[in-house]
Amino acid sequence: MLTGRLVKAVKTLVRVKESLRSITTVTKDTTVGIVGCGNVGSAVAHNLLRQGFKVVAAYDMDAERLAAMPSSVARTTSPRLVAAAADVIVTGLPRPPNLKAAAEGPDGILAGLTEGKVWIDHSTTDCDQTKEYSEAASKQGAHVLEAPITGGLEALKKGQMVVHVGGSREVAEAVNPILKPSFCEIFYVGEIGAAMMVKVVSNMLACVHVIAMGEVLMLAKRSNLDLRTFWNAIRVSAGNSFVWETAGPLIFSGSYDPGFPITLQNKDLQLGYDMARKYEVPMDMHQFALSIYRRTQYQLGDEAGCYSPPRTYEIALNESLQVKGFDTWEYDNEIYNDSLVVSHSGLPPRNKK
Image (cartoon, rainbow, N blue to C red; front, side, top):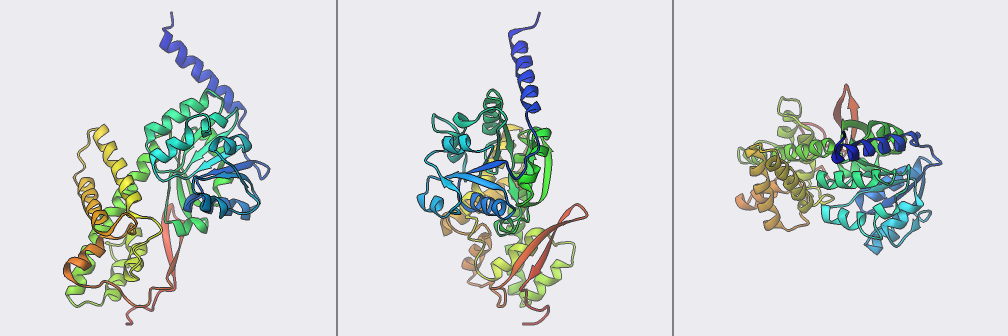
């Protein structure tokens, strides 16, 4: 005889398979709703509208952010109303508690989901939390995809970020057209949890690069090397990286990327540290990076840019890493031979002061 737990599992599997039959590839007649109208939600909405998709409803706790959405998008008073109005719901929220507030309760997203609807979550959040929401949605015949993003928020506005997708492959393929306007690469990783692992580990690696970058730039400065020449030399060496290419100009200009505050970077690092504890993997470098980033946050404040650790070296040693000529710098992302490649515009000429 089947045990009660096994019967429940079989029933859940049957329900999921039945709901997948109702999934068809989205078109420009598919309606989209946005919950969270900050940097991510706003950019996704604009990208979709430019490509002729129907963004029909939006919600944000911040009235100013909601008001700044395109006039064609209806403002709602709850996440539930967004979910009820749209076939596909897109979220981009800063922290797990924000996602919890938007998802749960009588006015939450889950309360508005019905059969065949898809919730795409771009938040970098707790994957166990996302699994719970996916299970809850499946009981209503709906689907959840985790879809954390990487590559820089300015790139998102140009449709050049990368999105890692976790969840049902069939659902991911069905909503692919809605993702294409915002992302140069849609990388399916596996079941829910896999994409978030990739995202938080990628962020940790980026933070390690930023810390090391501050050290070597300061070494070059105190050795009386020309920083612009030094940066260009590393760009054509084995030490180059996406972070070296894109963080360098933001350090040289003195902005340190204020578009993504260090408090959110530390949230991502903490999520990675929690994963390491869960799976009992010693990650000394991860813990060291988190420690330095925490110290930077405490010293410079929650809104300091995510590339700010080199700024603490400038303060400690009374040396500036700023270089003239990077104020108009921009970059573009593209996938070349399966790798993310950066191209620059507005750079000063090489080897010239």
